[in-house]
Length: 281
Image 1 (cartoon, rainbow, N blue to C red):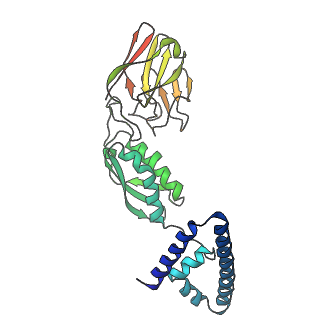
Image 2 (cartoon, one colour):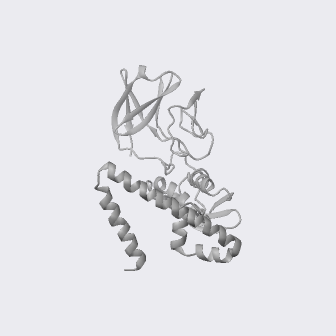
Image 3 (tube, rainbow, N blue to C red):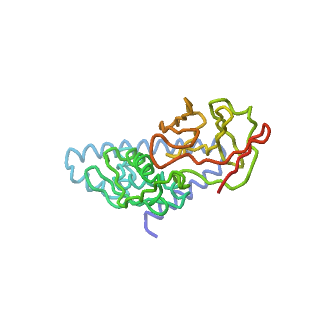
């Protein structure tokens, strides 16, 4: 065991002992600790000031030592280094990765091309999903730009295949799946005319829309990023997502903002005043 490891172990041992003391005893120990730290900080501040006047190279060399740097950082006498660009990009990808993996997809960093471009590769279902372009531009790209404002371009190195059928059943990886069954969700009177009603069933969220005698049912998730839709504005049978403004025809589920995607729809049957919906896999 090195000298440094011995010191750390000794500090941990004393902290464990103090944690068992009563509150008044701990207050005395904490007060002593703060006084000693304040004294050390003042001494280190004066030392740094003198080193700056005598030799900046010596000061830089001293700070290169990990123990010296850690102590100075603890006393807030040096700034914490900003994570590298690569680290920040990886942090952004980790933020969106759970949503991608929920649909057997993923994303990998391929390259950073300075000064402003990041290349990524969409993996699994994300590589050929009809909404992969939206996943890239609105999910991955937004996350990267949040952590890395210097990046202005995010490019997928694998070109997603184009799927022309809006009923292909493919959806954004930020959506969830439902089991198949006919279930009663509401009564006709519960669904407001020319609006939507959010209904929860078995942990899943759906929206019902009524226009005259016609009732439709969709998953309560925007096909763009999976955000809930029930608070969106409905005008002339068109629902606008409250998060990013994507619009949907509530008669067909078709997205009017982006082609080749649509809301996940479910068959509806009216029996008396009851609304039954088939939740498909």
